Amino acid sequence: CQIFTKSPRSFAVPSFDSDYLASILPQKNSYHQQWGIVHSNYLANLSKPRDQIPADIGGIIYDIKVWATLGFDCVNVHIGKGKDTTIDLAMTNMAHNIEYILKETQWYTIQFCFENTAWQGSELGSNLQEIALLYNSYLKDLGIKFVIDTAHCQWWGIDCNHREKIIEEWSHTIWIDQIFAFHLNDSKAILGTRLDRHAPLGKWCIWLPALSKVMKRASKNNKMMILETPDFALRPKEITMVRDIINDQFDIESFHREYFMSDILKKFEWEKEKYISS
Image (cartoon, rainbow, N blue to C red; front, side):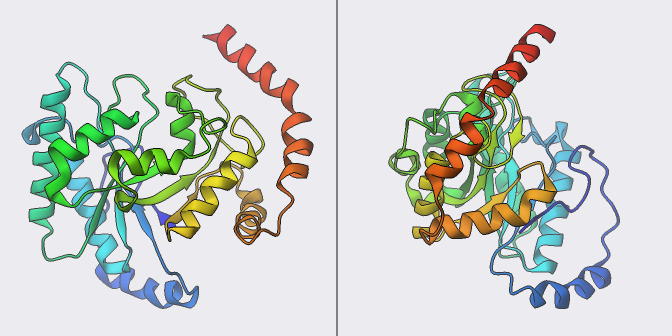
């Protein structure tokens, strides 16, 4: 599972209550949970000098403390933005800030992960080449891994539908061992629109046959998959669907014909209205 320790859209940090967090552990264990991610603040931007972002760094350190108390596996942070600076300076700042965070939390065993972005505004880390540069030239010695969001791939322009070996592409760039987990999402926005619009699995712009390949390869390589789809009522069905797809017990093509093709006019209407309004 994945949790937020606080509001993801605010820098406010609640008080740390270790007794309350410890009281949650028996409930967590009763679900036989194997993995877990603590997702940090959406606003955190580690590409700036450390003295300019005390709230960003403080929030991530707080996440790590909660993570350690609950026994989660990973803290996930969005790769920063490079506005008004060079890529080299932004990536250098990220490396220095992560090194500082890891030093401040060295008594915890933690996996720090960066998540690929959708290239909104001045976001860094959207394409394979940029992530390879970030990892190989700046982060390799820090043990950083990555969380790959399928919808973010679509928004930047990595066509999941026609690049069926997307995991292989990532593995050839930063090695599959550096992929820690997947955020498994469909995209309401079409290819390359740089918009953050998650959608239910297989019902919008990333076809289920393509998503199923990601699911199977992720499962084969023992990579965690987290749903961030927007309709909570559909989550139980989506979880069952993912498990059935992995076990070859789901009719992918029938689902694709029923939901994708029947709603295609609705998809185009959504896109038309979006571009008219902008």
